[in-house]
Amino acid sequence: MTSTTPLEPGFYGLGIAPKLLEILWKLKFKTPTPIQQKSIPIAVEGKDMIGIAQTGTGKTLAYGIPLIQRLAQVKGRGLVILPTRELALQAEETLRQIGYSIGLRTAVLIGGASMHLQIQALRKNPHVLVVTPGRLIDHLEQKTVQLKDIKILVLDEADRMLDMGFAPQIKKILQTVPTDRQTMLFSATMPQEILRIASAYMRLPIQVEMAPSGTMAERVTQELYVVSKMDKIRLLDRILSERRGSILVFTRTKHIAKRITQTIRGMGHTSAEIHSNRSLNQRREALDGFKSGKYRVLVATDIAARGIDVKNIECVVNYDLPDQAEDYVHRIGRTGRAGEAGHAISIATPDQRQEIAAIERFTRSRLPISKPIDLPAARPMEKFLPDPPPRVYQPHRKFGTPARAYGGGGGRRQSFSRRSR
Image (cartoon, rainbow, N blue to C red):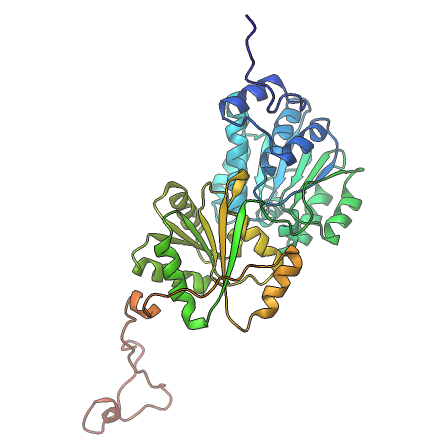
C-alpha cells in the first residue's frame, strides 16, 4: 500500500530541503502564499531578488526559509533589517520557530532594549542578526558588531524604512557589508529610491511582483462614515458596542491615541495603546495582550500599521484618516490576513474631501460611503477621563500679586519661595 507524504503538494517542489519541509509541516505551514511560491525557488538558488507584495502576504517565510537553508550551505551569517521594533521581534520569532530544532541562533538588535543584553547575545555568535537600522548603526559605531561575514542580506519593508527617514543608515550599512553576498529586498510599494538601491547595491535582481502598488487585500470590506468632529467619538462608541471581536483603532497622533484609549476604557472595553511614547516593554505587553485577548481594542498610530501581525482582527477603524494615502492600505491590511475575511471602517469629517480623494486615487477604487446611523447619546470624552488635578494659581515670582486677590487677606503679598512651589 502506498502512503501519501504530508509534503505534497504544499511547499514541495520549491527547492526546500526535506528537513525544512518536515519542520514547516509540523508548524502547520501547509500551503505557500503566492509571494512564497514565487520567491522561494529564486532565493534558495542564491540569486538577488526584489519581492513586491502587499502587507500580510507572508513575506517573512518568503525570505526566512531560503535564508535558513542557504546559511546551512555557505559559511557566514544572515542580516535582516526591518523598520520597527515590532516587525523585528515578529520576524525573529518566525525565524527562531523554524530554525530552533536545527540549532539556528538569532540575535535581535533594536532600539529601546538593553545594549548590554544585546552584546551578550552577539558573543554567542548568532547565525542571523535581526535589526532595526538605528540600533545596528549604534553597535557599528561602538564596534560591538562586525558585518564582514554577512553572506545574506534581507531588507524587509524597505519602502517603510525610507518613509521613516532611514535612507542614510541603510546606505551606510550597505557600504559596510561585503559585496560578495546575496541580497533580498521586500517591499509593499516600489518607489524610485528602492530602484536606485537595487541598481547600486544588488546584482541583476529578479523582480517578483504579486500586486501593483495600492492593491488591497481581496477579502477586506470597507466603508466610510462622514460625520462632524464632535460625533467621531460617538460613532466609535457605536462601532465598539455593535461588534464583538478584536478591533484595531488607528489615530493620527500619539496624544490622540492615549486619550482615545482612556475613553474606550471608560466605555467599558479593555484596551491598550501602542505608539512611539510607549517603551519597548509597554509596546510588547500591549501587543501580546491584544494577541491573547486580554485587550479587545488596540489603539495605535502608524508606527503599528506594518508592525502588527495578529490573526483574526475583526475590524480596523481609522478614527483619523492617515497622513499618507499608502498608509491606508497598510492599515486595513491588518485585518483579512492570510486569506481571511476582514472589515475596515474609516471616519472622516466633511472638510476631508481631499484626503478621501487621495486614498481613492492611490487604491484606484471608490470608498463606499455608509448612510448616517443613529448614534448613542452624547457621552463627552471628558466623562471617561480621570479628573485633572486642581490647578493652583502660581503668579510669577518677579511680579508677585496681592494675596487678597486670590482669597488671602490683609493685603499682604504672598511669598513664592522655591520650596513652596
